[in-house]
Image 1 (cartoon, rainbow, N blue to C red):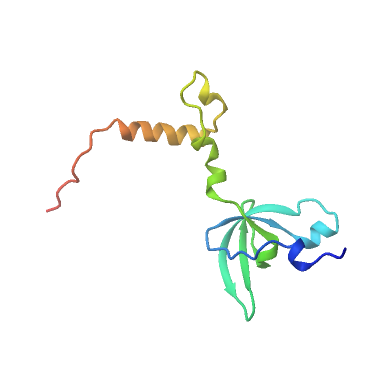
Image 2: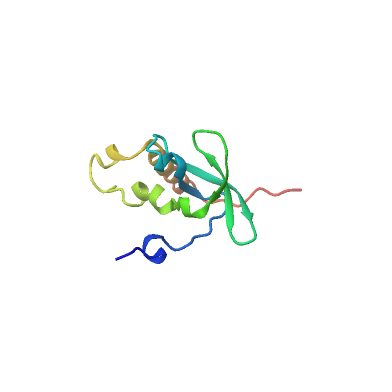
Length: 124
């Protein structure tokens, strides 16, 4: 049974500036070369006649220009924050498996929660 375009490709997604995406360089991938996939931030959205292209900033540095959306996958914030959202904070040693960023965020939340709410200072 032949592959249909619909069966082998995912639904087209439009990305926004500042979205974090996973980018796969098709030339490197199909040539079997290493480092073909990296995490990037969308820096610019280009509207061409019949499609959108994206300029990307890899987290390792540099710039990748005019990438087709078919080679990008969104990295949702919920995945980046999952360790905070699902942390078992009710047991001893629960924080041992948390990242430093998660611990810093929780510490800040605790400090903020323990401060008395106040009114903003008057300007005058």
